[in-house]
Length: 93
Image (cartoon, rainbow, N blue to C red; front, side, top):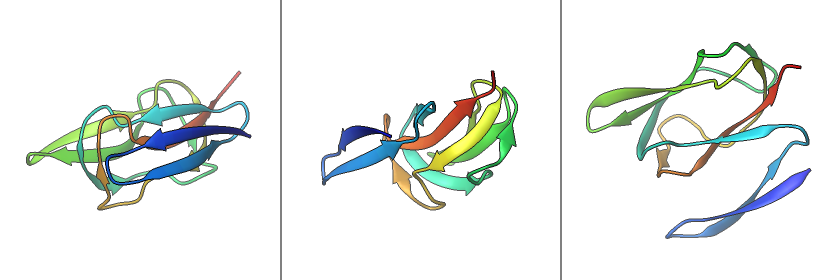
């Protein structure tokens, strides 16, 4: 597994990204309103993985490609900032 250090203003934590997976980070700050996938789920390009609520607007986080969910780093109602690790996806070959 590859480790990646993520620094926030409040704390420093280390996450593990499964080998062969790509990390998807929060594109904006807000709150995770809805989480729509679990590890092991198969997804297609454009599928909504989670919904971030920012200033009463719902912003979908879409899968960049076909693949499977390798790991989740978020949960519903969690506050996120731009760059917060959200999902690791293993792309289909």
